[in-house]
Image 1 (cartoon, rainbow, N blue to C red):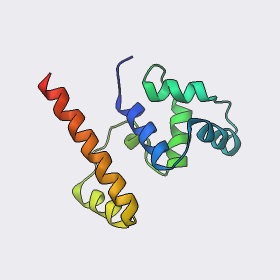
Image 2 (cartoon, one colour):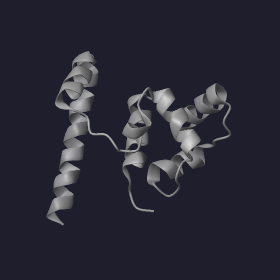
Image 3 (spheres, rainbow, N blue to C red):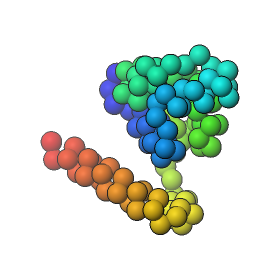
Image 4 (cartoon, rainbow, N blue to C red):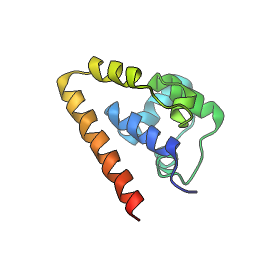
Length: 113
């Protein structure tokens, strides 16, 4: 399975929340009574396995995002980006800016190939 938006968004949300894969598994299994393991999270993040719709719904609920966002079906507007960025403390703003630059560099590298 090729690299997909869900994989990137899941990894981004998990890391942004400061969670390891195992910590995310523990929370999901406890809060939503799922039977997920760390290997499954890894496969989702690497795009080698797809999550079921019911699990995507639980992940969206946990991270407080829409399923469409998680699956890459929505594009944030400049207003929503500005609102989120403005809500972050300076440390997290710097982290987000750094992450955005990494995505930009990756995008540029892919265009050059």
